[in-house]
Image (cartoon, rainbow, N blue to C red; front, side, top):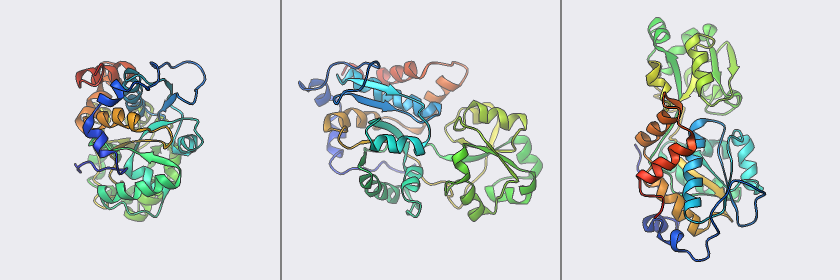
Length: 311
């Protein structure tokens, strides 16, 4: 796991301070609400359209409310094609993202060879959009090429490259944008010669519908994130990616620069400082596993356990 790096200079000191200033700030907005139209003082927290993003969005929203900020939530608004413009025009103010894929989205030619290079490049790419990234968490969730155990054994699959011999037999399941993004089908073709004969767009970001399609045989290969509890629960196989088609993917809070004040940054950075990959898997398991806990409760329980509520 790569050590976390700062996306934005000057925020590191704030992360070390923790929640104190946000909790004692006499000018912080009143306690949050999810209702009504957003005012200039309201922080609109959003998420992409898959469960993990909503969980992390709830971490941000609940901590900000507890610190005295007025908060509205607009979860599950879609992919980067939808939410990056929404951040830029002020429709939303804060959303969790992932460092490598976000950088590629903003700059398809960017160097994504390692986490530090990604984070440095992301700073400039976000600034060009009028956006800011806070401190990335240690937690990382990468795209993965996933097959069933039966398919892996039948085709003797270990790495993504092994799929190329079976292109004519593959239907690939992933979000629609996977067909065009550089690290999606174009990257699999360029790096490994993998060209599926068919593609099935599935809009839940590697969630239950994607898993069901894979397990039932509707698709033979699927894009599922590495922190998904479904991988272990369904005995699925993640194919190795030796050419790093999928870059480092640390969780990074991204927002409208005007709204990410130092007080807001303190609250969010305190979350990132404690969010590890194992913690993220555990949160996903509570929400998407057998327990089926609501994302808001999972987030509130985690924040309480970590001492980030009522500070």
